[in-house]
Every structure is written in C-alpha cells, then in structure tokens.
Image 1 (cartoon, rainbow, N blue to C red):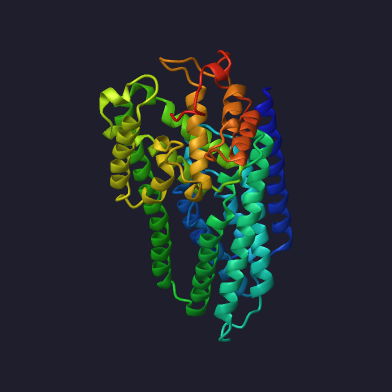
Image 2 (spheres, helix red, strand yellow):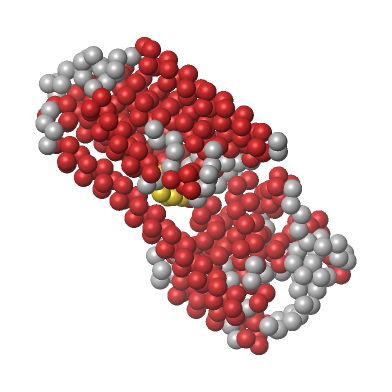
Length: 435
C-alpha cells in the first residue's frame, strides 16, 4: 500500500469510527425526534449539501448549516425532544456529495462523516443546554435563540475546520493550511446562518403551522442562491483572467507558462507567510495580470534581446501605465493593479515608501522565475544563485522575509528550479531581472 493511501486509510478509519461511536452514543442517551419533521429537515440539508459551491480557494460553502440549526432549535424547544440526536443524524447524511460518487472517492466521504457528526454533536449540545425548557412567551426568547444559534454555528465551524486541518496536514504533509482555515472569512457567514436558522426554528415552533414551512424553504433557497451567485461571479472573474493570459501568451511566446509559474511562486510565499484563502486569491489575481502591460508594447521592443535604452524603458513604462489604467476600471481587478505592475518598475523609478508586502511578493516571484528560466540570450541560473541575487539586491524591492518564505516554501515542497549554469556574477548585471 502506498504511503499516501495508508495515511488516508488511517484518517478515514479514525474519523469514521469516531463519528460512528458518537452517533451510537447519542442514540443511546437522547430522545427520538418526531421522524416526520426530521425527514423534512434531513431532505433539505442533503439537497443543499449536494449543491455546495466553492467560495474561496478550496473553501466550500453551503446554506446547509442554516437547516441544521433550524432543526436543532425546533427539537431543543420542543418538550421530550433533543437537538443533539436530530442534528447528529442529519449531519451523518451529508457526508457524501455527487462529486465523490463521480470520482469514486472514498477518503473524503469517510472523513467527512466523522467530522460532520462530531461537529453537529458539539453544536447540538449547545442548543440543548441553552434552549431546553426556554419559555416561548418570554420577550427574551428570540434573543436567546439567536445567541444560541450563533454560538452553535461557531462551535460547528471551529470543530469541523480543525478536524479538516489535521486530516489534510497528516495526509498531505502541508504545514500552512490557510486555504482550509480562513476562519475570519467563514465565521461571519456561519454565525449569521446559525442565528437566522435558530430564529426560523423558533418561529416554526411558536407559529406551529405547516404553511410557514413554504416561507422557510424560500429563505433556504435565497441563502443558497447568494452563495451560488458569488461562486459563479468568482468563476467568471477567473475565466476573464485566463482569457487575458491566453491573449498575452499568443503575443509573447516567453510568457507561455511564465505567468502561471509566477502565480504559483506567489502562492508558495503567501502560504509560508500564513495568508488566508482570500489573500492568496488576491495574490494569484495580481500575479496573473502582472505582465498584461506587454499587450501595449511594440513587438520589436518586446522581443529585443539585451539591455534596454533609457528611452525604451520609458516607452515600456508608459505603455504599461495605459494598460493599468484600463484594468483599474474593472472593479474586481482594481485592488490588484497597484501590486501587479512590478514588471515595469526598475531601480530608477522604484519608491520604497509606497512598496507593499504584496508587491514585494509578486516582484520576488517574478524575478525568481525569470532568473531560473532559460532565455534566448542567457542560460538559467541555479536556484541557489537566484536566491543569492535576490538577497544581494539593495533596491528594497525584495523583502528579506519574502525571499526567505519562497526558499522555505520550495524546501517544503521539495522542488528545485533553475540550471547548473555558470556563476550568477557572469550572467546577470544590475540586480535581478523582471520576467
């Protein structure tokens, strides 16, 4: 058995066993729910989990937690019922999604079963402790329900993501798992879903009329559509960026592959610096557009080998600024434009006072990729020589922490770039180049 499969089997076995023990234990100590009501919530939860969408880099989201908290609140407020068992039993059904079946995955469903059951159990305990026996006629009940729902959703999210972090770290050996742990991104939406779900549950119990369920389903649908719309907008943004890159690659053969490698190196640096999923995505967008200024540069100047004359550098900067102005008119690209024009900033125009950490990351990734790639007019530097060049540069463009982060990221992944070449001193002049 391969080491990766062995580690997956260990985590899947441990998590699924933990979830099964939790499920059986809860079943033994809690009252059974009204099964008809439970089936309705379970169906809604599974349907929404099947429609989970990616809202950030490898970060999935659905409005299923709202359904889970609604069900928990309903059963916590009802006499002789328990939120704990109802929520655990519902969560157990959401561990498999269509993608698992299509790709014949076994690790994710088994691990998800354990983490979702345990997370739901923690949330259910909070609801039972805070809401069991709460007087429905009290004016403070709704505030109590909202607070309980918010706390339960925080507990669910933290426990779930902690277990995901551990599983990914153990199986795949990654230390910095920020794309899976953007708590500040998730918590706000999760707390809101929990509070709203709790209030919906309280409303169902107080009104006690089945017709209200139609309005509840509409709320669930609106919540799902908001996530889905955001995901589609995000995909549209990425498609636009891919289109820009293809146009640039068609015009400049060197750029083919360069842009994606710069984006990859930027992400490695960001992970080492503990960037969140949202910050990593911003870095990636900035990296993908960092060379778009070439679209406005004359072909003969773009293909020129060797050093550029001062007037040629000025022409390149002017052309790049025109493209940046155009990109700045696009709402989702505007925050990235200020950090993406690093390709055209040389020592003569560099201003350390306005240089940001993000700009240094993209500049470092760009320079490293350029130095470790073979071009028509020079051989690639070795990885050690490239890092020596970055550290010897005294312009202030390459922050030491950023250079160290790139080096440690490559050590972590075991990747080596560049060639054996000749010493850096005989190949590069004037500091590290731009891609």
